[in-house]
Length: 174
Image (cartoon, rainbow, N blue to C red; front, side, top):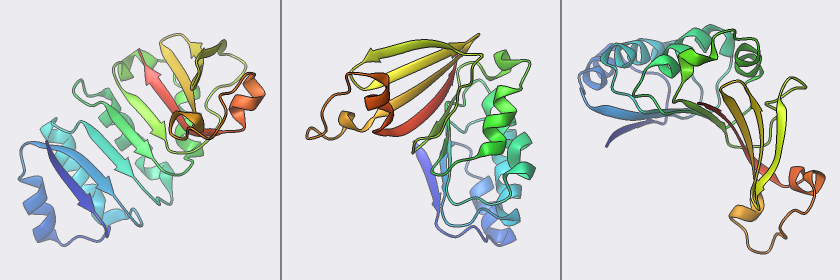
């Protein structure tokens, strides 16, 4: 797997050309501040159709990137879009999307606790010791409990106990 981790979001045209020429680029992680200079690279990689995962950290002004993120989610080979902070516009976009089938096979992950479901979802409850799920059409929302990684955290017995220790939230499109 060919992966690219950008610690700085500012890129020269030369670097954009070099990274865009990597035909088998499967994963990109963008650290620090997401800025306009990253967009040409992502658009080039989108056209190649080889990206499996995109991780975005410390992004500001999500609204302008929502369409681009959704276009990645639509690609058959694309597996996961990862955020390390809440992206309320992305959550709202998915919850109001009429055609969730276009994202089938993709996952959006937030590496913290954020509310991804609303009253229109069916609660599936605790599906195992570390996961609680909700479902709406072909969308499954999962919340993962910190006890998955830490043995000293007791396993949740109720939904509220579980919610107190959520460390990851995920939307999976079936």
